[in-house]
Image (tube, rainbow, N blue to C red; front, side, top):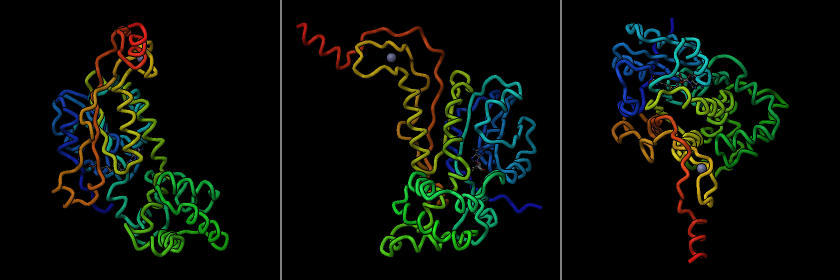
Length: 334
Ligand SMILES: C[S@@+](CC[C@H](N)C(=O)[O-])C[C@H]1O[C@@H](n2cnc3c(N)ncnc32)[C@H](O)[C@@H]1O
Ligand SMILES: [Zn+2]
């Protein structure tokens, strides 16, 4: 018997609004977790369908119970990067809305034996899918340069090299197996003055390892590559991010879709003919309201971004663009 699945959905109302749910539409929740967002989507459907994905078998189990009353829901245990093949297997051509609520669930963080948290002692695991390489295996086998890169890039940890170096020395004596062993080591590697400032000293490294173990940025990149192709015209993609790396990826991709034309800025006319593929719904994204942030600390780092897919591209736009080169041309002639 599994314990209750504890997870408070973040930006619930806002993300449901962003999806602009049509009762007969097809929706995909790529990160089903405890089924909180999925429940709200499913309860708005009349004749529509919801496909709910998660890579974590415990989430699938919990979502099965939470969503059992809805006949319109299909739950699939898989990575969201596989969304295209899931839709094709189900014979669905495209969806009207896709939701991603990224990162780990509170259930994952708060179940000590999943090994995500530096706050309880357990085997250093961190695998959402419970398959593949654990965080302990990564920490005990990756070369120094790789560990330092992971801590620097995924954790934005300024003492990345010091921590990686201490890990490499330590594991020659004895492998690092538990969350507390790693967290103690991180504390030893960080200078005392820095250790006393800011959040828990292990926070950044644990985040970095979790991202690496679960290939989180690769998953997000792959989904963003496919997302527009999976949506119907005017379909929406809503993404809730929890740290700057994933937020930047989403923002940059949305800006690229909204810009359309990829010609260099000094071209007087557009020669690529690419028109905007999507419209950005909230320029700066949406943060959780003050009240939600007070009730649910996890929501403090959350940001919701959303786009709407535009209608099929028109023939190439050859209108003169008054860019820098055009002004220069007119200036020389006059
Ligand atoms: C923040 S929780 C989602 C919570 C959910 N929206 C709710 O309201 O209950 C994130 C979930 O996404 C899953 N997940 C993260 N990355 C995934 C991926 N690449 N593919 C499939 N599931 C993923 C995790 O296992 C976790 O259960
Ligand atoms: Zn162009």
